[in-house]
Image 1 (spheres, rainbow, N blue to C red):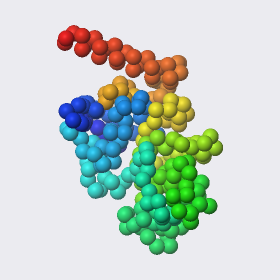
Image 2: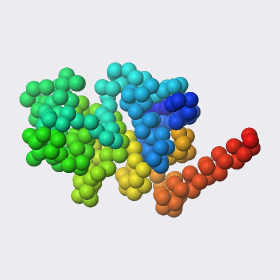
Image 3: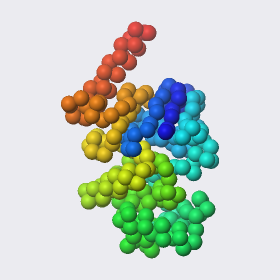
Image 4: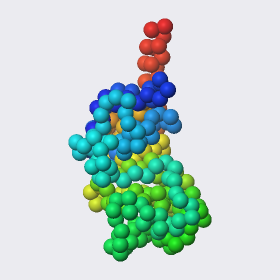
Length: 245
């Protein structure tokens, strides 16, 4: 279980996440919000790359900043960074070393991951020759090198062509069948509707909804309900600002 308790993150005196509380148990949880809503900041705090200004985040009861928590997770950032002159396979070996994984057994495991994401044939090419879609696939593969229990994916389908999107979705669904918990950060409504068991709607750093996707939609399209929810929040916010003025 991932638990957020009254989490706030302030940048330059401005709260980008404010009093955020949530418990996540769903196999695939979609984090939905417009650009700038605070999704990536929340994800980075969850994987221990940022510290909350206040509040706590735990994974299976372990604080997100603890090393023991990091052993359980895999993270694919929105824009993965690579050492350009390494080959895809060399990069996978490098990532494996960070977890103390090496040798023939790990090499076979890493090759299997590259096959899973569809870039095995390019494993011996330098990353500087990879297309954006290939880089996305490699970023996905590196998130799996430690065989994590929890997988955090920040816009994993960005830059992929239609075939790549379908293949990546199939990989995500297969990981669900393997028992992994997947936290999917996206602003693409269709992907949430197609893959996620539950979702959280974030706007201006506030959680507006969390729960089953079907319950949220309530017979309407996800797009329609998302826009309604955000507009309702904006009306309430404007009303409060006018009242205090």
